Image (tube, rainbow, N blue to C red):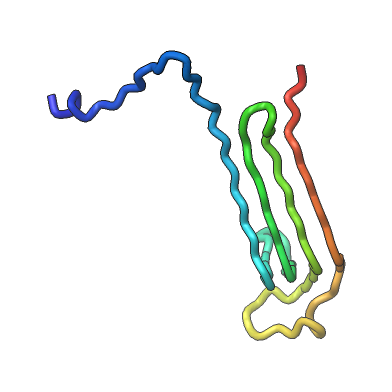
Length: 112
């Protein structure tokens, strides 16, 4: 009986149509870095960015789902030294990518 008392039910309201939920996530990071060591490879990847902004969301047709990635002053470095200990960025890493600004936009499309 207690569960029946706490049960929630949607009651219809005449003339009102509930909107479809819209979900969004905004993430903004400054002066950040990511140290990634893929398990099967003897490799170390260092990704740095002065500013990183990630926006993703999903919703009804006017607001389709998608992902937007903005990187300002970013770099990617590789190193063969995977062990512990102090590493020197200039001595132990090789720069493989250096961008002033990168914008990556991925949108979903519902064909019909």
